[in-house]
Each structure stands twice: as structure tokens, then as C-alpha cells.
Length: 132
Image (cartoon, rainbow, N blue to C red; front, side, top):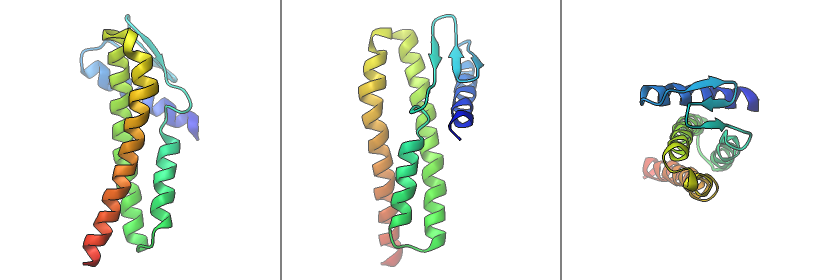
């Protein structure tokens, strides 16, 4: 399950980076350019945060339709955020390599978890507004 997801993130991120003018290539989970090689590993796939979001949606009382819509929307939004994360980390590695580890280990870890929680809160708010 994890390897195909990581390969998908690498291939799509490399394509977006190429569209942005970064001459990248991809081999499996590795995005490369003349300036940087970035290996997307297990944990960079956002599967854990996505699974926690899905579990939280399933745990709350709501109709199956609302849960399915929430899960689909959450997965798509979390995927988009993860693409943004990978792309900004690549750009950081190229332009400010000294900041890469800080951005990877500190900033994006917090941002990604905060966004997953925010999405859950927004979904819960949508349930409340629907019942009112």
C-alpha cells in the first residue's frame, strides 16, 4: 500500500516541479534535479494523518453519506497539502538547503497535523450547520 502511494507522490510532485521550471526527473520514490535529490520515504506519504482523519470521521455520529463525503473531501485536501509540502521542501532544499531539515522536521510536521485537525473541525461544523 505504501510504496505505490509514495511513488505517486514523487511522480506527481516531480511533474509539478517541472511545470514550475525545476528540471526534475523521477525514479521510483526519488525526485532529482541538478541541484537536489529528494527521496520520499515512508512517513512522507501522509497516510498516518489521513488514516487518523478517516477514523475520526467514522467515529462521529453522522449519516453514511455525510461520512463518505467528508472522507473523500478530506483525503483529497490532505493529498493536495502533501503535494504542497513535498514541493515546498524540494524548493527549500534547492534555494535554502540549511533550512531543509528544520522545514521538514519542525514546520511541516506541525502544519500538516494542524490542517488535518482543522479539516475535521470544519467537517464537524458542517454537520452542526446541517442539523440546525
